[in-house]
Image 1 (cartoon, helix red, strand yellow):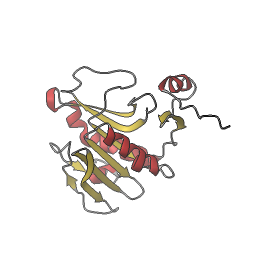
Image 2 (cartoon, one colour):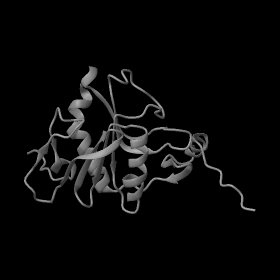
Image 3 (cartoon, rainbow, N blue to C red):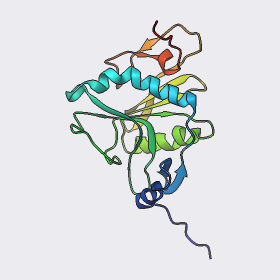
Image 4 (cartoon, rainbow, N blue to C red):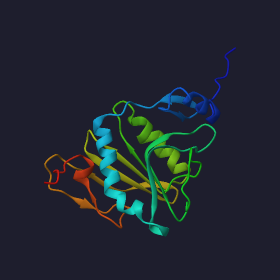
Length: 194
């Protein structure tokens, strides 16, 4: 007789975190997050800089935007997102700890060998829990794809591939269409100020 596999819970994750904080809970399994690469950090910090003006706004137009945040969606799902944001009108006070309120926006930056987690698992999970916007950045392909929830399903609302040496392109992408985002800055193609 085969023994049933026990799905791990958020309590198991919290206990394991005492030893290693680079863990997340995916479908009831505690998994190691991939090592951060320079390209990953460059895309993450570049995007943070580009949307920083919206983060600083207070009131209904403001955002809480944080990197590497864990979100508990249910007892068996607690991924750590590369970037996640909550509108301040939904979350007026500064939160703390593991988040239990689903974000308004999530951005994942693909890591080689872990693409399935972001392109399939997270996309389906975030769609199921009705996160309004989901972005995927691929440093290797130098691309950004933005999804928006439409009648319970994600649809692509923006996609671009930015080749090295391309002319700087500033775009407006929901939910941050109030400001322009320099795609070159996300992929490290900005010249330092003299």
